[in-house]
Image 1 (cartoon, helix red, strand yellow):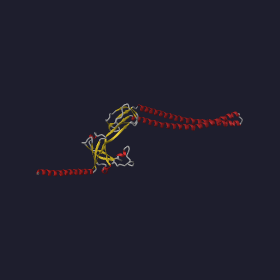
Image 2 (cartoon, one colour; image 1 turned 120 degrees about the vertical axis):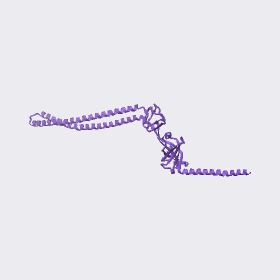
Image 3 (tube, one colour; image 1 turned 45 degrees about the vertical axis):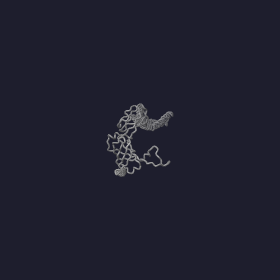
Image 4 (cartoon, one colour; image 1 turned 90 degrees about the vertical axis):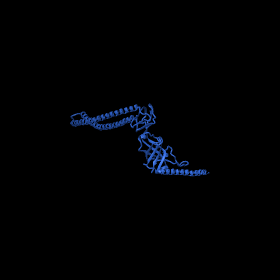
Length: 349
């Protein structure tokens, strides 16, 4: 009986002890989480991101050669795709021929200016010759006029001399009237030279543009990174503006963490961050808060919600926070890929 009583008494003592230990453990866990929460903000709504450069065709053409394979590492400037450039080479040759014609036209116009200037000298010589003929005709007229007054010549002879004088005066007026026309021709030819010369600049611009189109048929890598999402095949016709593939800049990795708006109070730029990538749970990355998005993620969605319509249901919004990776193993970073899920802890104090 005594042993049985002692056993029951022991059981009554053990239960309160266990309950007390559970309560103490729960209280300790709660206090620990509270203290931890006062100096940390965490979220598992985060992912690894990187700058992804889509490469598009700038001219239309058939794919002549592809010099990369999907998921290959390339360096900036590497030739990746070559388009058939025969059409653009023909356009370049046409532009070069048009430039040659324009230059020849300038030479012709300059020759016309020289010829017109020669005409000025000829016209001036004609004026001088007309003046000499008029002087002679005038002198003859004066002599014959005196002879006619003395009845030494006939009326017919006097009229012939007078006609010669009138003809010489008309010839002088005609020669003098030619001078302005010749000068105007020179001015017009000079303007024609200028117009033709400006056409040369236009043709040279056509050549530069044709060369630019030819250069667009050789597509190079814009940055160092991994080529992914190839969507072309040899012989395929691509159009200007068509997306051909993308290059992922693996050296520009960062983490985007979507924190609740209620967590933003203590977040500051420059705070230290611990990052656990789901794919590599045994490795903790280090980083710092770099910047905050200008609006919530919902505002950047295709159809942003409008609280002014329908029944209002309050939903906690999330703010994208950009986290810069710093002080980590470069070899390990090369294993990360954009889109990997991660858990982020920010040391707020």
